[in-house]
Image 1 (cartoon, one colour):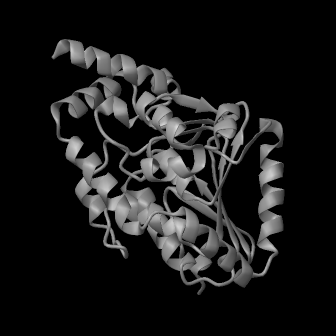
Image 2: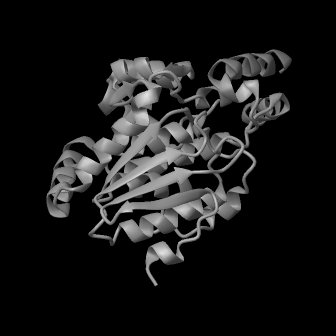
Amino acid sequence: MTFLDDFAPTHLRLTEVSPTFWRVTFDNPPVNVIGTEMMRDLKNLLTELESNDTVNVVLFDSADPDFFLAHYDLAADHAASEALPSPTGYAAWVDVTVRISKLSAVTISAVRGIARGAGSEFALATDIRFASREKAILGQMEVGFGAVQGGGASGRLPALVGRGRAFEILLGGGDYDGDTAERYGYVNRSIPDEDVVAFVDDYAARVSRWDHRVIGEIKAFVNKYTRLPDSEFPLHSDAFWAAVPTPGFQAVTKGLFERGLQQKSDLEYRLGAEIADVAAAVTTAS
């Protein structure tokens, strides 16, 4: 039995496009939140990829064209997530993003819908990001909860967009469409939605044909000059989880769930704007 035969994920699908090109499709209705089971699936996949010297490209996309990865599952059992195996010894989500960023295979995020919070952090941890011009939305809204970004966004964004724009994104907490994300360097490029699947598939197939050794060597050199030390990222997670029990974080979370958080609601489509209103209401009430 091979890994492909044994792997039975519940919140994503794995497709072998070819022996050197794997596609991972997120599929966790209604809006693809990142919870314990998705992290379990990702950790199992990463364990295979870390020792696999055949797969050259892993393309991440979504079964839902409106949501790539909405954000972290704020209703998840945190203790269960943290009990998952962590080869790095880091918190659950940091373990995932650090390991993704270090794979020898090229990792590509095809963002056709919304990627906020941890969803944006996942895309930032991959090597390459392509976005739908009309449908992609990226953002880091954690400031609205009164928290830092726990999965490393403040460590990865500055190298991509520069110091000033990193502050703009992280402090504003708003949404960025595909074209703006491309101009800023948040994504590699934005592509008309009708063309994005074909473009990304063609690019991934092209890269998958190169020699595995040279791909790994190119990645190792680029990572050497652009990645923070792994030990920096747990600091972000610690700061985020320290904010979670505070009254402000809890009040904003409660207000968002009352308005339709983690459902296919107007709130989830407009979360970058709506969180400011909810946070303001909480501040006024207190």
